[in-house]
Length: 91
Image (tube, rainbow, N blue to C red; front, top):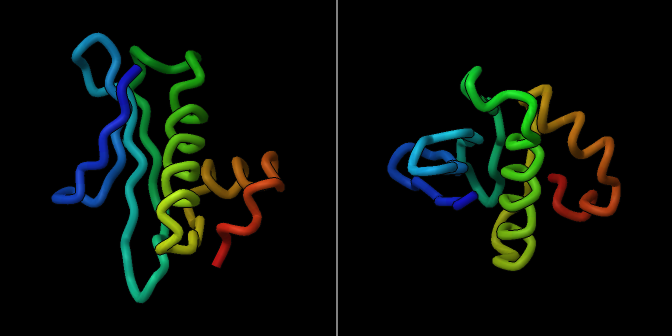
């Protein structure tokens, strides 16, 4: 799986075998990235792609140290509940 940050579309992407397998959309304002939507197409469901994508994004944001995260997407909210060790990223 390959991960890409598509800044033009305000999303992080997961690619599998040359196909877009997942998206995590955000809106950036004043040092905060509001993750408001996560999408995995049906043919890729059940493979853990959303979780791997969100973990990659949060690891990348942690290393960069520039943004805090405001999760409003229900999936990202649940991901943070299941990964309290990432609470330092929350706005």
